[in-house]
Length: 212
Image 1: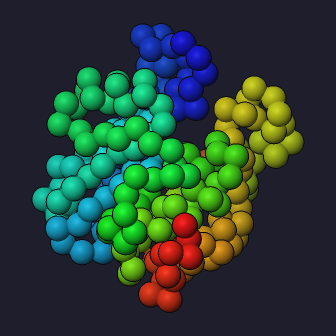
Image 2: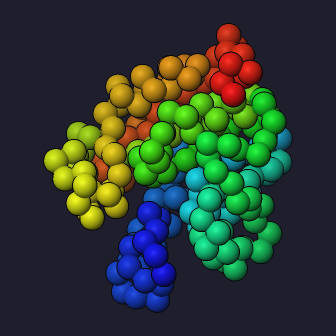
């Protein structure tokens, strides 16, 4: 099995099991934040754009306000594991730079611990914005430059630095969101400040065609 950004160790191993336990707890807390703060309407649609094994999407799909919850990832193995765990999951293999959804169709598009691993995170964020409804929300969580993972900036090309991915300051993340037509509303720190997340709204002045 090759290296996977969403895993640590091999399935069945002690290290993998511990990381999996932490990841599940993190996802439950993120879901609680999203359903209490980021869902803009009833009967909404949610897209986890870069889901890995999609624990959060499985939890979100149980909320009665959510009409449709979809997980996408380019990693077929991760989605296969997700479907083995939850055979009712809506899972799609897709590239974040070319999301297979029409403009303005998703109420909340989000991810955590995803954009930092991508060669062109702004392009992927632009795609997330394109598929989000005008007035809908986008949430992105990434390693916090001013938290325990901030040392990544000094070791970006090592195996540890590559596994962590690029660390962002809140201002850098907000700036990237503004450039693709999002209006940042609030920043949060989570998982002992390892991560920073920003919740933003898609501006009514953004034309989705301009993001293609």
